[in-house]
Image (cartoon, rainbow, N blue to C red; front, side):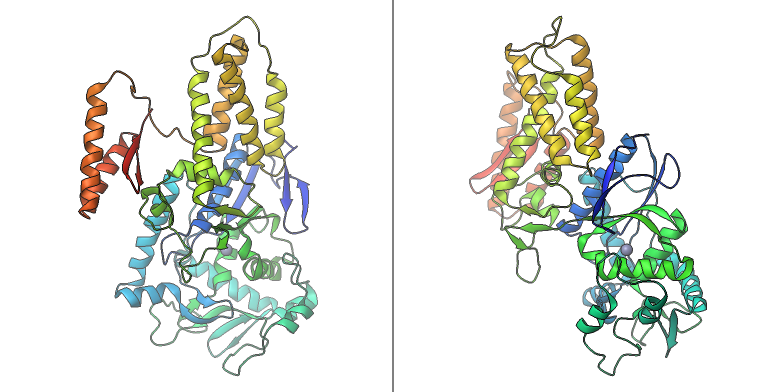
Length: 492
Ligand SMILES: [Zn+2]
Protein backbone atom coordinates (compact mmCIF):
# COMPACT_ATOMS: atom_id res chain seq x y z
CA UNK A 1 0.00 0.00 0.00
CA UNK A 2 1.18 3.48 -0.80
CA UNK A 3 2.51 5.00 2.43
CA UNK A 4 3.57 8.20 0.70
CA UNK A 5 0.09 9.67 1.09
CA UNK A 6 0.24 12.78 3.23
CA UNK A 7 -2.89 14.37 4.74
CA UNK A 8 -3.43 17.68 6.49
CA UNK A 9 -4.63 16.94 10.01
CA UNK A 10 -6.80 19.72 11.47
CA UNK A 11 -5.95 18.41 14.92
CA UNK A 12 -2.40 19.78 14.83
CA UNK A 13 -2.43 21.88 11.66
CA UNK A 14 0.27 19.72 10.07
CA UNK A 15 0.61 17.47 7.08
CA UNK A 16 1.21 13.91 8.27
CA UNK A 17 1.98 10.62 6.57
CA UNK A 18 -1.24 8.63 6.43
CA UNK A 19 -0.98 5.42 8.41
CA UNK A 20 -4.23 3.58 9.06
CA UNK A 21 -4.75 1.77 12.37
CA UNK A 22 -5.38 -1.50 10.58
CA UNK A 23 -3.15 -2.33 7.64
CA UNK A 24 -4.87 -1.92 4.26
CA UNK A 25 -8.14 -0.84 5.88
CA UNK A 26 -9.51 2.67 6.38
CA UNK A 27 -12.43 3.72 8.57
CA UNK A 28 -13.83 7.10 7.56
CA UNK A 29 -16.75 8.99 9.10
CA UNK A 30 -18.21 12.14 7.56
CA UNK A 31 -20.98 14.23 9.15
CA UNK A 32 -23.94 14.07 6.79
CA UNK A 33 -26.80 16.47 6.12
CA UNK A 34 -29.68 17.52 8.34
CA UNK A 35 -32.63 16.66 6.14
CA UNK A 36 -35.06 19.52 6.66
CA UNK A 37 -34.56 21.36 3.34
CA UNK A 38 -32.99 20.89 -0.10
CA UNK A 39 -29.28 20.15 0.15
CA UNK A 40 -27.16 23.28 0.19
CA UNK A 41 -24.50 23.71 -2.49
CA UNK A 42 -21.89 24.31 0.22
CA UNK A 43 -22.75 20.90 1.68
CA UNK A 44 -22.48 19.36 -1.78
CA UNK A 45 -18.96 20.74 -1.98
CA UNK A 46 -18.06 19.04 1.31
CA UNK A 47 -19.51 15.70 0.17
CA UNK A 48 -17.85 15.92 -3.26
CA UNK A 49 -14.52 16.61 -1.49
CA UNK A 50 -14.92 13.50 0.65
CA UNK A 51 -16.07 11.54 -2.39
CA UNK A 52 -12.72 12.43 -3.99
CA UNK A 53 -10.90 11.30 -0.83
CA UNK A 54 -12.93 8.06 -0.65
CA UNK A 55 -12.30 7.35 -4.33
CA UNK A 56 -8.57 8.01 -4.07
CA UNK A 57 -8.14 5.79 -1.00
CA UNK A 58 -9.98 3.02 -2.86
CA UNK A 59 -7.83 3.66 -5.93
CA UNK A 60 -4.73 3.14 -3.78
CA UNK A 61 -6.11 -0.27 -2.85
CA UNK A 62 -7.42 0.39 0.66
CA UNK A 63 -10.58 -1.32 1.82
CA UNK A 64 -12.54 1.69 2.98
CA UNK A 65 -15.57 1.67 5.25
CA UNK A 66 -17.15 5.04 4.66
CA UNK A 67 -19.88 6.01 7.11
CA UNK A 68 -21.94 9.15 6.54
CA UNK A 69 -24.95 9.81 8.72
CA UNK A 70 -28.33 11.34 8.04
CA UNK A 71 -29.40 13.75 10.78
CA UNK A 72 -33.11 13.12 10.92
CA UNK A 73 -33.75 13.86 14.61
CA UNK A 74 -33.94 17.60 14.28
CA UNK A 75 -31.38 19.38 16.36
CA UNK A 76 -32.12 22.79 17.71
CA UNK A 77 -31.63 25.96 15.75
CA UNK A 78 -28.67 27.25 17.65
CA UNK A 79 -25.69 25.76 19.35
CA UNK A 80 -26.75 26.93 22.77
CA UNK A 81 -29.32 24.11 22.82
CA UNK A 82 -32.19 26.55 22.37
CA UNK A 83 -34.70 27.42 19.68
CA UNK A 84 -36.97 25.18 17.66
CA UNK A 85 -36.16 21.79 16.15
CA UNK A 86 -35.61 22.52 12.43
CA UNK A 87 -37.34 19.40 11.13
CA UNK A 88 -40.33 19.94 13.43
CA UNK A 89 -40.51 23.58 12.35
CA UNK A 90 -40.65 22.62 8.68
CA UNK A 91 -43.28 19.96 9.44
CA UNK A 92 -45.38 22.52 11.31
CA UNK A 93 -45.07 25.10 8.50
CA UNK A 94 -46.09 22.58 5.84
CA UNK A 95 -48.62 20.67 8.01
CA UNK A 96 -46.93 17.31 7.44
CA UNK A 97 -45.29 14.69 9.65
CA UNK A 98 -41.64 15.29 10.60
CA UNK A 99 -40.82 11.91 9.00
CA UNK A 100 -42.35 13.17 5.73
CA UNK A 101 -39.95 16.10 5.85
CA UNK A 102 -37.11 13.68 6.51
CA UNK A 103 -38.13 11.35 3.69
CA UNK A 104 -38.59 14.13 1.14
CA UNK A 105 -35.20 15.72 1.75
CA UNK A 106 -33.31 12.44 2.15
CA UNK A 107 -34.55 11.46 -1.31
CA UNK A 108 -33.60 14.91 -2.64
CA UNK A 109 -30.13 14.67 -1.09
CA UNK A 110 -29.43 11.22 -2.55
CA UNK A 111 -30.69 12.21 -5.98
CA UNK A 112 -28.49 15.34 -6.08
CA UNK A 113 -25.41 13.40 -4.91
CA UNK A 114 -26.10 10.77 -7.59
CA UNK A 115 -26.25 13.52 -10.24
CA UNK A 116 -22.84 14.67 -9.00
CA UNK A 117 -21.71 11.03 -9.44
CA UNK A 118 -20.75 10.80 -5.75
CA UNK A 119 -20.45 7.19 -4.60
CA UNK A 120 -22.89 6.21 -1.86
CA UNK A 121 -21.20 5.62 1.50
CA UNK A 122 -20.75 2.05 2.77
CA UNK A 123 -23.18 2.74 5.62
CA UNK A 124 -25.62 5.65 5.85
CA UNK A 125 -27.04 5.42 9.38
CA UNK A 126 -29.79 7.68 10.67
CA UNK A 127 -29.93 9.38 14.05
CA UNK A 128 -33.48 8.15 14.73
CA UNK A 129 -32.34 4.59 14.03
CA UNK A 130 -29.72 4.87 16.79
CA UNK A 131 -31.60 6.31 19.77
CA UNK A 132 -30.83 3.21 21.86
CA UNK A 133 -27.07 3.56 21.24
CA UNK A 134 -27.25 7.25 22.13
CA UNK A 135 -29.05 6.56 25.41
CA UNK A 136 -26.41 3.92 26.27
CA UNK A 137 -23.65 6.47 25.58
CA UNK A 138 -25.26 9.00 27.92
CA UNK A 139 -25.48 6.37 30.67
CA UNK A 140 -21.75 5.66 30.20
CA UNK A 141 -20.81 9.35 30.32
CA UNK A 142 -22.86 9.77 33.53
CA UNK A 143 -21.09 6.73 35.08
CA UNK A 144 -17.72 8.31 34.18
CA UNK A 145 -18.87 11.45 36.03
CA UNK A 146 -18.88 13.90 33.12
CA UNK A 147 -22.61 14.44 32.70
CA UNK A 148 -25.42 15.53 35.01
CA UNK A 149 -29.20 15.45 34.88
CA UNK A 150 -31.43 18.44 35.60
CA UNK A 151 -35.23 18.36 35.19
CA UNK A 152 -35.21 15.47 32.73
CA UNK A 153 -32.39 16.87 30.55
CA UNK A 154 -28.77 15.66 30.64
CA UNK A 155 -25.78 17.93 30.03
CA UNK A 156 -22.11 17.26 29.40
CA UNK A 157 -19.98 18.90 32.11
CA UNK A 158 -17.28 20.63 30.05
CA UNK A 159 -15.54 22.26 33.05
CA UNK A 160 -15.23 18.98 34.95
CA UNK A 161 -14.06 17.12 31.83
CA UNK A 162 -11.43 19.78 31.15
CA UNK A 163 -9.93 19.27 34.63
CA UNK A 164 -9.03 15.70 33.65
CA UNK A 165 -8.64 15.81 29.87
CA UNK A 166 -7.97 19.04 27.94
CA UNK A 167 -11.02 20.36 26.04
CA UNK A 168 -10.61 22.42 22.84
CA UNK A 169 -7.81 20.43 21.15
CA UNK A 170 -9.31 20.54 17.67
CA UNK A 171 -10.51 24.12 17.53
CA UNK A 172 -7.51 25.44 19.47
CA UNK A 173 -9.78 27.17 21.98
CA UNK A 174 -8.89 26.90 25.62
CA UNK A 175 -11.48 26.73 28.29
CA UNK A 176 -10.65 30.13 29.87
CA UNK A 177 -11.14 31.82 26.53
CA UNK A 178 -14.43 29.98 26.07
CA UNK A 179 -15.66 31.01 29.49
CA UNK A 180 -14.67 34.58 28.72
CA UNK A 181 -16.44 34.59 25.34
CA UNK A 182 -19.71 32.85 26.17
CA UNK A 183 -22.60 34.90 27.38
CA UNK A 184 -23.76 34.13 30.87
CA UNK A 185 -26.83 32.00 31.45
CA UNK A 186 -30.09 33.90 31.48
CA UNK A 187 -31.63 31.96 34.33
CA UNK A 188 -33.87 29.97 31.97
CA UNK A 189 -31.27 27.28 31.41
CA UNK A 190 -30.70 24.23 33.53
CA UNK A 191 -26.99 24.10 32.66
CA UNK A 192 -24.34 24.54 35.36
CA UNK A 193 -22.11 26.44 32.95
CA UNK A 194 -22.81 28.03 29.57
CA UNK A 195 -20.10 25.87 27.93
CA UNK A 196 -21.93 22.65 28.82
CA UNK A 197 -23.89 21.06 26.02
CA UNK A 198 -27.02 18.91 25.92
CA UNK A 199 -26.79 15.14 25.60
CA UNK A 200 -30.51 14.68 26.16
CA UNK A 201 -33.30 17.26 26.14
CA UNK A 202 -36.65 16.79 27.81
CA UNK A 203 -39.35 17.41 25.19
CA UNK A 204 -41.95 20.12 25.67
CA UNK A 205 -45.54 18.78 25.35
CA UNK A 206 -45.81 20.18 21.77
CA UNK A 207 -42.60 18.50 20.60
CA UNK A 208 -43.49 15.68 18.18
CA UNK A 209 -40.17 13.82 17.73
CA UNK A 210 -39.63 12.23 21.15
CA UNK A 211 -38.42 8.99 22.64
CA UNK A 212 -38.60 7.47 26.12
CA UNK A 213 -35.39 7.48 28.16
CA UNK A 214 -34.40 6.98 31.81
CA UNK A 215 -34.47 10.78 32.27
CA UNK A 216 -37.55 11.93 30.36
CA UNK A 217 -39.50 11.63 27.14
CA UNK A 218 -37.23 13.66 24.94
CA UNK A 219 -34.63 13.67 22.22
CA UNK A 220 -30.83 13.44 21.95
CA UNK A 221 -28.46 16.38 21.55
CA UNK A 222 -27.04 16.71 18.06
CA UNK A 223 -23.36 16.08 18.87
CA UNK A 224 -24.17 12.72 20.41
CA UNK A 225 -25.43 10.94 17.27
CA UNK A 226 -22.09 11.20 15.48
CA UNK A 227 -20.21 9.72 18.44
CA UNK A 228 -22.77 6.91 18.71
CA UNK A 229 -22.77 6.04 15.01
CA UNK A 230 -19.06 6.50 14.26
CA UNK A 231 -17.94 4.32 17.16
CA UNK A 232 -20.65 1.72 16.53
CA UNK A 233 -19.53 1.12 12.93
CA UNK A 234 -15.83 2.05 13.03
CA UNK A 235 -14.79 1.22 16.60
CA UNK A 236 -13.73 3.43 19.51
CA UNK A 237 -10.71 4.57 17.50
CA UNK A 238 -10.78 5.09 13.75
CA UNK A 239 -8.75 6.72 10.98
CA UNK A 240 -10.51 9.67 9.37
CA UNK A 241 -13.27 11.99 10.56
CA UNK A 242 -14.40 14.58 8.06
CA UNK A 243 -16.90 17.36 7.70
CA UNK A 244 -17.29 20.98 6.74
CA UNK A 245 -15.00 23.56 8.33
CA UNK A 246 -17.98 25.07 10.17
CA UNK A 247 -18.43 21.84 12.14
CA UNK A 248 -15.02 22.02 13.81
CA UNK A 249 -16.49 23.92 16.73
CA UNK A 250 -18.51 23.12 18.66
CA UNK A 251 -19.73 19.93 16.92
CA UNK A 252 -16.46 18.04 16.41
CA UNK A 253 -14.96 19.35 19.63
CA UNK A 254 -17.97 17.96 21.49
CA UNK A 255 -17.66 14.62 19.67
CA UNK A 256 -14.06 14.33 20.89
CA UNK A 257 -15.07 15.17 24.48
CA UNK A 258 -17.93 12.63 24.45
CA UNK A 259 -15.70 9.83 23.16
CA UNK A 260 -12.74 10.66 25.39
CA UNK A 261 -14.92 10.93 28.49
CA UNK A 262 -15.54 7.19 28.11
CA UNK A 263 -12.39 5.74 26.50
CA UNK A 264 -9.77 8.33 27.65
CA UNK A 265 -8.27 7.91 24.19
CA UNK A 266 -8.34 10.11 21.08
CA UNK A 267 -11.18 8.70 18.92
CA UNK A 268 -9.82 9.87 15.57
CA UNK A 269 -6.32 9.83 13.99
CA UNK A 270 -6.91 12.37 11.21
CA UNK A 271 -9.47 15.18 11.26
CA UNK A 272 -10.11 16.50 7.73
CA UNK A 273 -12.18 19.61 7.03
CA UNK A 274 -13.46 20.88 3.69
CA UNK A 275 -13.61 24.63 3.23
CA UNK A 276 -16.66 26.63 2.27
CA UNK A 277 -18.14 27.68 -1.02
CA UNK A 278 -19.07 31.31 -1.60
CA UNK A 279 -21.35 32.68 -4.33
CA UNK A 280 -20.29 35.76 -6.30
CA UNK A 281 -17.75 36.64 -3.63
CA UNK A 282 -20.19 36.51 -0.73
CA UNK A 283 -21.27 33.96 1.82
CA UNK A 284 -24.31 32.00 0.63
CA UNK A 285 -27.41 32.81 2.67
CA UNK A 286 -31.10 32.35 2.01
CA UNK A 287 -31.90 35.54 3.92
CA UNK A 288 -29.90 37.80 1.56
CA UNK A 289 -30.98 36.02 -1.64
CA UNK A 290 -27.33 35.16 -2.37
CA UNK A 291 -28.26 31.53 -2.67
CA UNK A 292 -28.70 28.92 -5.40
CA UNK A 293 -29.73 25.27 -5.28
CA UNK A 294 -27.83 22.62 -7.27
CA UNK A 295 -30.98 21.78 -9.25
CA UNK A 296 -31.45 25.45 -10.19
CA UNK A 297 -27.95 25.44 -11.71
CA UNK A 298 -28.64 22.23 -13.66
CA UNK A 299 -31.96 23.47 -15.08
CA UNK A 300 -30.98 27.10 -15.52
CA UNK A 301 -34.13 28.10 -13.68
CA UNK A 302 -32.61 30.78 -11.47
CA UNK A 303 -32.16 34.54 -11.48
CA UNK A 304 -28.39 34.56 -10.98
CA UNK A 305 -26.97 32.80 -14.06
CA UNK A 306 -27.93 33.24 -17.71
CA UNK A 307 -27.14 29.64 -18.69
CA UNK A 308 -27.45 26.22 -17.14
CA UNK A 309 -24.52 24.00 -16.20
CA UNK A 310 -24.45 20.22 -16.00
CA UNK A 311 -23.66 18.44 -12.71
CA UNK A 312 -20.34 17.24 -14.19
CA UNK A 313 -19.27 20.81 -14.95
CA UNK A 314 -20.13 21.86 -11.38
CA UNK A 315 -18.26 18.84 -9.99
CA UNK A 316 -15.26 19.63 -12.19
CA UNK A 317 -15.39 23.27 -11.05
CA UNK A 318 -15.36 22.14 -7.38
CA UNK A 319 -12.44 19.76 -7.95
CA UNK A 320 -10.45 22.53 -9.66
CA UNK A 321 -9.95 24.01 -6.19
CA UNK A 322 -8.18 22.24 -3.32
CA UNK A 323 -10.68 21.00 -0.73
CA UNK A 324 -9.11 23.19 1.99
CA UNK A 325 -9.36 26.45 -0.01
CA UNK A 326 -12.42 28.64 -0.20
CA UNK A 327 -13.99 28.35 -3.65
CA UNK A 328 -16.09 31.10 -5.19
CA UNK A 329 -18.90 30.10 -7.53
CA UNK A 330 -19.84 32.54 -10.28
CA UNK A 331 -21.13 32.27 -13.82
CA UNK A 332 -17.74 33.37 -15.23
CA UNK A 333 -15.96 30.68 -13.23
CA UNK A 334 -18.45 28.00 -14.33
CA UNK A 335 -18.12 29.01 -17.99
CA UNK A 336 -14.32 28.68 -17.67
CA UNK A 337 -14.72 25.25 -16.02
CA UNK A 338 -17.16 24.15 -18.70
CA UNK A 339 -14.60 25.00 -21.41
CA UNK A 340 -11.87 23.16 -19.50
CA UNK A 341 -14.08 20.16 -18.90
CA UNK A 342 -14.98 19.83 -22.59
CA UNK A 343 -11.31 20.26 -23.54
CA UNK A 344 -10.46 17.35 -21.25
CA UNK A 345 -13.28 15.21 -22.65
CA UNK A 346 -12.19 16.07 -26.17
CA UNK A 347 -8.65 14.87 -25.31
CA UNK A 348 -10.08 11.67 -23.90
CA UNK A 349 -12.00 11.01 -27.12
CA UNK A 350 -9.00 11.88 -29.35
CA UNK A 351 -6.72 9.58 -27.34
CA UNK A 352 -8.61 6.58 -28.71
CA UNK A 353 -7.99 7.60 -32.33
CA UNK A 354 -4.31 8.69 -32.25
CA UNK A 355 -1.92 7.49 -34.96
CA UNK A 356 0.63 5.15 -33.37
CA UNK A 357 4.38 5.48 -34.10
CA UNK A 358 7.49 3.42 -33.29
CA UNK A 359 8.45 5.75 -30.49
CA UNK A 360 7.24 8.64 -28.37
CA UNK A 361 8.49 12.18 -28.81
CA UNK A 362 7.98 15.19 -26.52
CA UNK A 363 6.39 13.33 -23.61
CA UNK A 364 7.81 11.38 -20.66
CA UNK A 365 5.03 9.09 -19.50
CA UNK A 366 6.70 7.85 -16.28
CA UNK A 367 7.54 11.36 -15.19
CA UNK A 368 3.98 12.49 -15.94
CA UNK A 369 2.47 9.58 -13.97
CA UNK A 370 4.73 10.27 -10.98
CA UNK A 371 3.63 13.90 -10.98
CA UNK A 372 -0.05 12.88 -11.03
CA UNK A 373 0.41 10.60 -8.01
CA UNK A 374 2.59 13.16 -6.23
CA UNK A 375 -0.26 15.68 -6.57
CA UNK A 376 -2.89 13.36 -5.11
CA UNK A 377 -0.53 12.05 -2.43
CA UNK A 378 -0.02 15.62 -1.26
CA UNK A 379 -3.27 15.97 0.66
CA UNK A 380 -5.50 15.13 -2.34
CA UNK A 381 -4.40 18.03 -4.54
CA UNK A 382 -7.00 17.63 -7.29
CA UNK A 383 -6.34 21.03 -8.98
CA UNK A 384 -2.73 19.99 -9.54
CA UNK A 385 -3.79 16.58 -10.86
CA UNK A 386 -6.17 18.34 -13.29
CA UNK A 387 -3.31 20.61 -14.43
CA UNK A 388 -1.27 17.48 -15.24
CA UNK A 389 -4.24 16.02 -17.13
CA UNK A 390 -4.33 19.22 -19.21
CA UNK A 391 -0.61 18.75 -19.97
CA UNK A 392 -1.42 15.31 -21.29
CA UNK A 393 -4.28 16.72 -23.40
CA UNK A 394 -1.92 19.30 -24.86
CA UNK A 395 0.40 16.47 -25.84
CA UNK A 396 -2.51 14.41 -27.27
CA UNK A 397 -3.49 17.39 -29.43
CA UNK A 398 0.08 17.68 -30.71
CA UNK A 399 0.08 14.01 -31.70
CA UNK A 400 -3.33 14.49 -33.28
CA UNK A 401 -1.96 17.39 -35.35
CA UNK A 402 1.13 15.38 -36.26
CA UNK A 403 3.74 17.59 -34.56
CA UNK A 404 4.63 14.91 -31.94
CA UNK A 405 4.43 11.11 -31.90
CA UNK A 406 3.31 8.39 -29.47
CA UNK A 407 4.31 4.73 -29.23
CA UNK A 408 1.74 1.97 -28.89
CA UNK A 409 2.94 1.20 -25.33
CA UNK A 410 2.58 4.84 -24.24
CA UNK A 411 -0.84 5.05 -25.90
CA UNK A 412 -2.02 2.13 -23.76
CA UNK A 413 -0.42 3.56 -20.60
CA UNK A 414 -1.92 6.98 -21.15
CA UNK A 415 -5.34 5.51 -21.91
CA UNK A 416 -5.29 3.45 -18.71
CA UNK A 417 -4.18 6.20 -16.36
CA UNK A 418 -6.13 9.10 -17.87
CA UNK A 419 -9.21 6.91 -17.56
CA UNK A 420 -8.31 5.98 -13.97
CA UNK A 421 -7.87 9.61 -12.95
CA UNK A 422 -10.81 11.02 -14.92
CA UNK A 423 -13.45 8.38 -14.11
CA UNK A 424 -12.32 6.61 -10.92
CA UNK A 425 -10.41 9.24 -8.93
CA UNK A 426 -12.04 12.51 -9.97
CA UNK A 427 -15.37 10.73 -10.44
CA UNK A 428 -16.14 12.54 -13.69
CA UNK A 429 -18.32 11.21 -16.46
CA UNK A 430 -18.42 11.98 -20.13
CA UNK A 431 -21.21 14.50 -20.71
CA UNK A 432 -22.61 12.62 -23.69
CA UNK A 433 -22.42 9.46 -25.66
CA UNK A 434 -20.94 9.78 -29.11
CA UNK A 435 -23.73 10.56 -31.55
CA UNK A 436 -23.18 11.50 -35.17
CA UNK A 437 -22.79 15.24 -35.51
CA UNK A 438 -22.15 15.54 -39.21
CA UNK A 439 -24.20 14.46 -42.17
CA UNK A 440 -27.30 13.72 -40.13
CA UNK A 441 -29.74 16.25 -41.47
CA UNK A 442 -32.84 14.60 -40.07
CA UNK A 443 -31.48 14.45 -36.51
CA UNK A 444 -30.25 18.05 -36.52
CA UNK A 445 -33.49 19.28 -38.06
CA UNK A 446 -35.53 17.42 -35.45
CA UNK A 447 -33.41 18.86 -32.63
CA UNK A 448 -33.82 22.38 -34.01
CA UNK A 449 -37.58 21.87 -34.13
CA UNK A 450 -37.55 20.60 -30.52
CA UNK A 451 -35.66 23.73 -29.44
CA UNK A 452 -38.25 25.94 -31.14
CA UNK A 453 -41.08 24.04 -29.41
CA UNK A 454 -39.28 24.24 -26.08
CA UNK A 455 -38.72 27.98 -26.45
CA UNK A 456 -42.40 28.47 -27.28
CA UNK A 457 -43.41 26.42 -24.23
CA UNK A 458 -41.17 28.53 -21.99
CA UNK A 459 -42.58 31.78 -23.41
CA UNK A 460 -46.06 30.46 -22.56
CA UNK A 461 -44.79 29.47 -19.09
CA UNK A 462 -45.68 25.86 -19.92
CA UNK A 463 -42.81 24.50 -17.86
CA UNK A 464 -44.27 20.98 -17.83
CA UNK A 465 -43.70 20.69 -21.59
CA UNK A 466 -40.34 22.50 -21.59
CA UNK A 467 -39.05 20.26 -18.77
CA UNK A 468 -40.28 17.13 -20.56
CA UNK A 469 -38.31 18.09 -23.70
CA UNK A 470 -35.19 18.95 -21.69
CA UNK A 471 -35.28 15.83 -19.50
CA UNK A 472 -35.92 13.48 -22.42
CA UNK A 473 -33.03 15.00 -24.39
CA UNK A 474 -30.82 14.85 -21.29
CA UNK A 475 -31.51 11.16 -21.05
CA UNK A 476 -30.26 10.86 -24.62
CA UNK A 477 -27.12 12.74 -23.54
CA UNK A 478 -28.07 15.90 -25.34
CA UNK A 479 -27.55 18.86 -23.05
CA UNK A 480 -30.04 21.72 -23.24
CA UNK A 481 -28.92 25.22 -22.27
CA UNK A 482 -31.32 28.03 -21.55
CA UNK A 483 -30.08 31.50 -22.44
CA UNK A 484 -31.98 34.81 -22.58
CA UNK A 485 -32.01 34.35 -26.38
CA UNK A 486 -33.71 30.97 -26.08
CA UNK A 487 -32.74 27.33 -25.62
CA UNK A 488 -29.80 25.74 -27.36
CA UNK A 489 -28.55 22.17 -27.35
CA UNK A 490 -25.11 20.69 -27.17
CA UNK A 491 -24.11 17.32 -28.54
CA UNK A 492 -20.99 15.77 -29.84
ZN1 LIG B 1 -21.39 15.00 13.05
